[in-house]
Length: 425
Image (cartoon, rainbow, N blue to C red; front, side, top):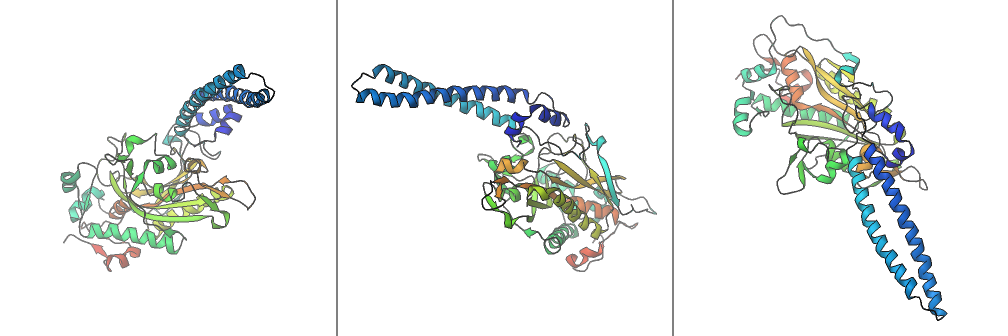
């Protein structure tokens, strides 16, 4: 959530920054309501001062044997007016909060300005796409041919955008999960968390999914609970409404969870295979850090996500997202895009973002830099470390062989019981 004080202090600058995110006029209603808020506060303060001084005067008049009835009536009327003004103030502040909760984060100065993904900037590439001496297949053909992915039975169970993993497909998914968790906990210093897969509405507000993106969420019927769209939600909200010790920062946490997304607005996009699903697995990385270190931590987080792709030998590129393509809560985002021979293109496999204090304000996560210092909001970062289903798809496509089998990347073989090649059984 944006700092309301900063908006009041420099509304034109905030407008300018929000225009970079292709939003115009969004502050007009805020400024009108804020002016109304100040007017109400002024009236209430004036009446409260009158009530206080008059109450004292009533006491004096009584001591002096004077009749304070008329003044007491005025005090009573003032009290009634204050009550009405307090109710008006509460209603105005609720409207202001609604506006603030729907405003996206301000982009960092290093973020390219643009309408959409066409303005993204490629930062670097790693690895060379494999040159095949046969016509490579897409993973949605490789998986069924090996009898390790079953889209038809998944549709029978749950409808479109679901997958049943079978045999070595299920084991490969599990192997990737364990491999990622081991690397991030043993080599990158993250603490593993196994969080609940359902969270409260307050948690979804805290990380920015609600109220703006309610249609993308799966809500539990009859309860104010939601299936998590990413482990970013429970991991960040572990510290909601807490004051952290400076000595305990930074905090690095990671988790494997299934993720649930309605994918509203994505009709017709990546409808085949396991690239865009309603349920998918992911290992998430979250950092809670001090403001002055957050951009250095973003580079480290991105490097952590890159490392697992390098160990798997999967070619990828790093892209800096433009203001028109970055997420709602982010101030700066790098996407990692893995090479997919079936698409003859790079596909997103991780997003690594610095949200600065945007989520911390919503979730009220603060720290005290020194014992006598004022409380400050932490900065939060998150990134996929990385998406599991998309990793499996990338392995199937990049490691396929002419006979239809798939070579298991060397680093995964210990997790696959020593298996070197997946063949149809």
